[in-house]
Amino acid sequence: MSEDEFDRSDVIVSDRWRFTAAPTTVMGLHGSVLLGLLFLIPAVWLGIFRPVLILWVGYVAFVIYLKSKWKISPFDWFGMMFTRFVRGNKWLVR
Image 1: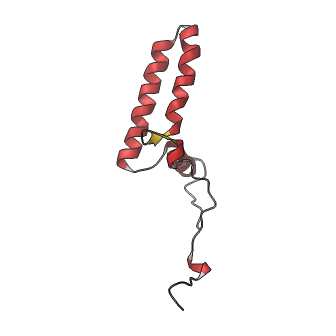
Image 2 (image 1 turned 45 degrees about the vertical axis):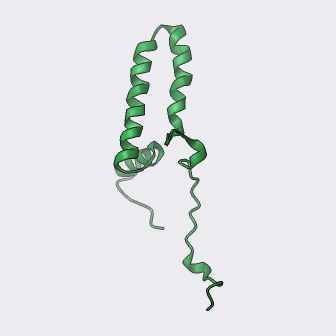
Image 3 (image 1 turned 90 degrees about the vertical axis):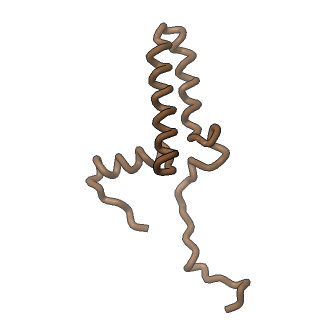
């Protein structure tokens, strides 16, 4: 087999959407950190700005922790926790 040819059975293609690709990131973090901004607007009107801000900053810290320690997104982490605690730690084999 020449260098230009390849065996299609050797190529693994993931059919899962890539939620953590570069266009969905904010300064290298998962794009879900922007959702906190949407919650801050009604929080000002409802008078609960400070608790919502503290929760949002905590979530941003959680995303930074996941990114720095395991290089995963919150989407991947929640999927792992769902598999671990709800599905009885039964992982799909690819």
